[in-house]
Length: 455
Ligand SMILES: NC(=O)c1ccc[n+]([C@@H]2O[C@H](COP(=O)([O-])OP(=O)(O)OC[C@H]3O[C@@H](n4cnc5c(N)ncnc54)[C@H](O)[C@@H]3O)[C@@H](O)[C@H]2O)c1
Image 1 (cartoon, helix red, strand yellow):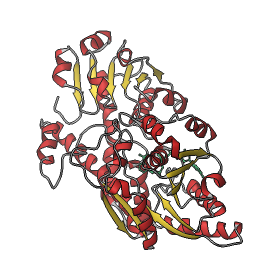
Image 2 (image 1 turned 60 degrees about the vertical axis):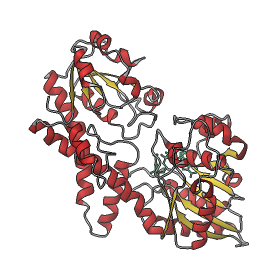
Image 3 (image 1 turned 90 degrees about the vertical axis):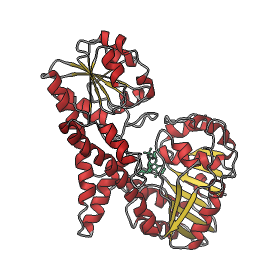
Image 4 (image 1 turned 120 degrees about the vertical axis):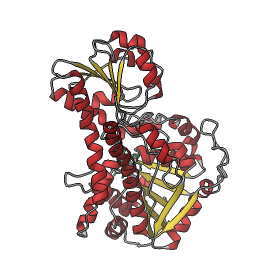
């Protein structure tokens, strides 16, 4: 099928590369010429494991362009995958969505066009996009030959494992009011649904994995599924964090508690990791958008609101623990291990490391950070932050009064803590992810504090 993708960010690029790999002809459109130039050379502008390798396999059927006309003219299926960041009032900024819809209306020419919202958009956006496309189409095209169908196809990938999440998804959700739109997307995704493609050797099919659930619904339900899924995941993390604070007080061990409740199949053991809590481009923005949407209908969302409150309290708690340990932060040197909001990505949006570094700098501490893949991006995107950047994980420890582990990169587990401890002024680690081996660190002569364990 002839596919166009608007926006080549984390979602759009992953979608475009995957669909081209599956055999479709895909044109990826972006307004950022630097991104497009880099992609034309076959190099991904974002860090995502195996993306460059899959890009290479997909390249024969993949085009990158800044031209609306070139990307959209022949497209049968058009995905909108532009950003929808939060506005100060909590609602998503729909400027990019609007200009994508206008570009579609002004440029499409195929007789049947399915327009697919893959961006996370407020409920009702499908209808809104359709009306913009129609208005623009009428204003630009006298022949009025094209028929439009709008669908919502929310994306559930996780950065850091985006490609395998797409190839071996838990489910594909498609919402549309016209069955033709649903059928077109079912056809597009058939190789994924039935797992008929040859798995690349660097992204092997999990053992026993045979098919992807395809769930079709009306437009609004699909839009709401995305928000509900993210809010639920966010509150699962916040729930274990709420319990973890009590666990510390009563002298319990949050790891045992998480395991103890997670073995109940109704609860499940994933997303029960106590720590600093979530960050990233989605949970904060989507929980806020859900609350804002509900407000329009005079509804409150107390559970979602509480999930947010607990989450952001965790960041403040990290600073409190540090102040309790060091007493004075002014003039202290604090190292931060991990800058991105999770391992295996360079995405810095709503990264707890930024928040922590800001709070520490405000209190007069000197902050030195390190991340295996997000350093260059941090230097650019956080240019206003007076943080220093270390050349290696080990050098974060040099002369430090404390080191905070913020991102659970497996590399950090491999450090020689006796050597790292020897470089420190005060041998203290605050493990914000309950990730390091406490006994190993204590045996290396360092004090370690984790959230959710009595110390
Ligand atoms: N990142 C994730 O993990 C994730 C997961 C699921 C859903 N989502 C949702 O998917 C959407 C995209 O997220 P992302 O992280 O990929 O964003 P992103 O910021 O990485 O990418 C958006 C891209 O769109 C481009 N763009 C903006 N306006 C454009 C236009 N008019 N025409 C062409 N290109 C345009 C930008 O230049 C950018 O490259 C958001 O709504 C997000 O909530 C993201």
